[in-house]
Amino acid sequence: MTKRDAIFPAGRQALYEINRYSAAIRSGDFLFVSGQVGSREDGSAEPIFERQVHLAFDNLAAVLKAAGCTFDDIVDVTTFHTDPATQWGAIDAVRLKAFGEPPYPNWTAVGVNWLAGFDFEIKVIARLPQPA
Image (tube, rainbow, N blue to C red; front, top):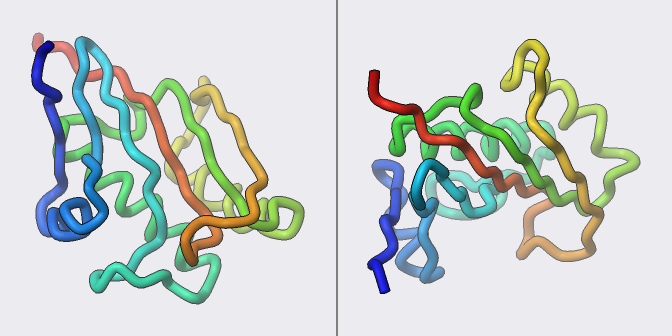
């Protein structure tokens, strides 16, 4: 079996080591990114929901950048929400900035009742840019 090609953004390795998972795995032409949350530098949840969403997108951007990707390379998104009906407006504002113009990636939103102290999580699959 081939060893996993793990990707880690700078400065967050301790978080992944403590919780024993990789930020992302490169496989063939794709990057599979683990769920990113709005954690502060110490790993705790940002208590203000809008900032938590911004931090989750910032953390996602850092993982993408470590693999040589951007939001334009994302083909599939799954988000998890603890209260989708009241949270969607704040999430939508951030996602529209991140993803810009159509065509947008696939998107699945899931309501959940537990995210380890967080209220929002985003995981994606991106196509790795091909060398010119």
